[in-house]
Length: 302
Image 1 (cartoon, rainbow, N blue to C red):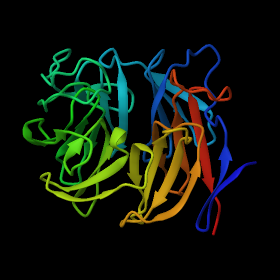
Image 2: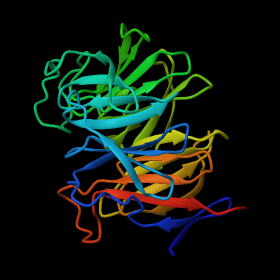
Image 3: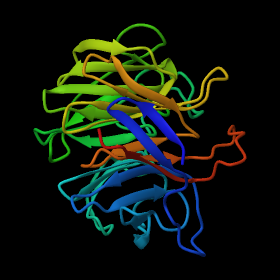
């Protein structure tokens, strides 16, 4: 078994941990999340929208929501799923069996950013939404959205879905400039972390969008989560010939552990400290061993 990481953050890798059911078409595995009972939810873009596994990777059930056509970010809090439907430019709250509870945005209506090609630097910021990437519930109940594939904004909504404010400008260098904000996280100490993927950094803001800091020792950060001890875990895509990677950092952004991975579009850390990494085989992937799947990193006891 392959071992990665170091010190307190050392893991045994379980490759292709999720045992997808025979006959289930496997599409792009875009996200992974764990509920309060320890069940693992894998979101994909073909066949069933979400497949559910136990912590050993055994398939339990699936659900296919007619209200989600192009799932991207997927997050679970208090047994509610928070989903970004990228292509439809809406974000949704769902039950854990796929019943839609709330939709923010108008399906198929994309804000005017002057961007037609996914991933390009946009010409101008637009309102909600133009291919959003993740919906995240803050401890306060407010909702935050990274709106990144054809926009350059972060949006803050009330729990009822009313827009409170937006921030972000197109650009590559300065604070508050974004090139594909790919994920968003709000912590208990009222900070907003944004994976500014194609600018190779995580930017940090106050709850109202005031710039605080940034972490730049990254490749292309795709997702960020935090554990109960305030330690952050970041999945990173390949860049400039360097492979994908997972980084474990403290609240100052100092690296505690990191290792190369096969891919990594999304990740989750469960209550035990194990990491689930959603692998997306894109058109630019050259590793023949890579499939659309989930790798699990089982944390070793200190």
